[in-house]
Length: 419
Image (cartoon, rainbow, N blue to C red; front, side, top):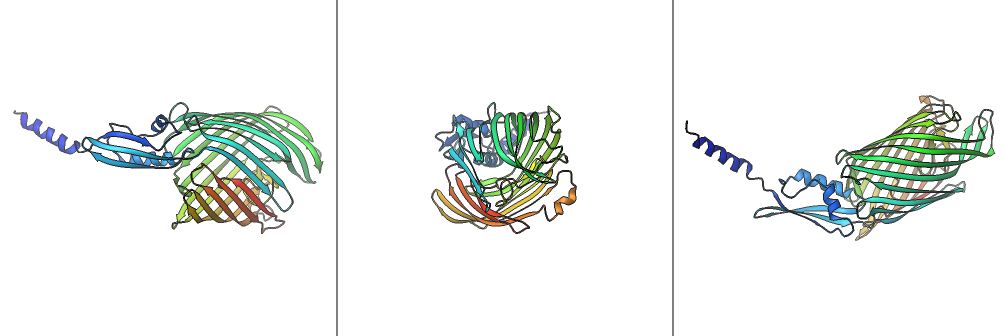
């Protein structure tokens, strides 16, 4: 049998069937000045010598636009004689950023939190920073987060905080005010499965101290105690968000599970978990609808020190600073954001929002979520002053007005979108 015709046919098929895929002959990263080029290449999947794949290009750009160091990213493909020249264009953020949160209510409550963070330390997308808070008492903390320390998938985070606040404790006989201190040390391992899925796993060693100040007392409720605890934490995130400067579209889900072990019998061990579901949709050219649904449960101990709080700066704008506690939570924040002015680096954005939430009482049942005394409904309006090339440079002002029984109203100021 003459094999020459068979070999010739095979070579023709190979040439015409597979030889048409030109390879990437040159890869250029341009526009970055602070972020190291080697760091960008490490985080992307594009490589010189690979077959050009538009799906890989799109995933790389989406990943880059999520980085704190990058305001915007794009790609260009030019066909050349020996392959394709691929250019990744980078518009960098300014990443040494102060943070501020200020919140008040019509009860003359006032608290603030200030911080300074570098989100691109050493040009490697490492976050390092510290915070100071005044909420009657002084508090402070420090954070280090290196999500790509070892590779594009593996990193570490370390957190320290010394938090002191005045906490209301809700007893059958009335409300007691306690001075609360939490000093914690946390270490987390970070793992990125792919562009959409990541996980954090770690442990937190902390000390809790409660000191009775004023208000109601009750037999069996200690007035002073100090206890050391261990907290085991798992966070799983699915992120399919796409960014175009101030506009966001897509879906994101964050699951947070914690198991807290007490070294003494003053407070019981407990399990707590919650999930944030976030959905964003572009509306026309200048509109953005954004929603966050948080659902969570904890071990249902009949304790006045329940873990879920109703708070101005966490879940319901205008409600006040820690006005209630529960062992379950269901909160919906939804708002429409409209760009009023967009010129070069500056954006002025307005928003109209509705925050509604309900809580399960400590030791209660699921009917508590429907109890009118536990439901908080706060519509409101706000403004956003934004710099398009400074990471998270969004100064927000929101005013929430309660429409449910015994409601308050007040302003919430902060850096960054509320969610």
